[in-house]
Length: 161
Image (cartoon, rainbow, N blue to C red; front, side):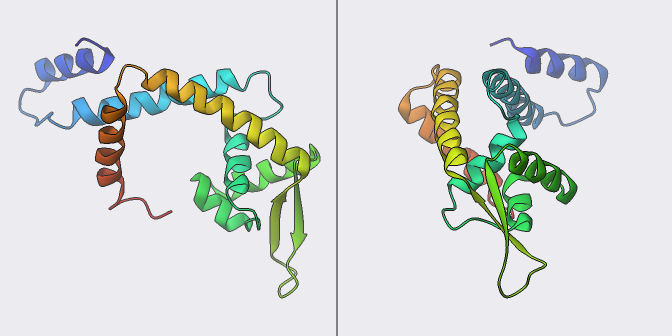
């Protein structure tokens, strides 16, 4: 199989034969797949009223019917606090979320989807599943499950979400 990562690996092997390049095949493809999937998602959202990072916030809130605090959203979306704040401001202005101060500590807020936000999240998520199915189509169902299991084993020690 020849792809961009194979080309990178051949180049590095020529340039630095003294290095152990055994991680490049797997990690290079994981990183490239993530970058390309982000592009595919952004292209798919081009006609929607949200960006990919904003969609990630909507999806995180949709999975949490009681809402989340901004700090939890930052952790869920692997974003910075400033980015989360900017996204929440934009989504609130668009009428997709609400931010309600907590009774016990008015400095904290609970973020929830509006009905419109919930409908949009459901629509966008269904379309995202179609995009992901297309990307994974070269693999059988069993191979997809095996890939998911292997990636889970790699992620488990480093993912603190």
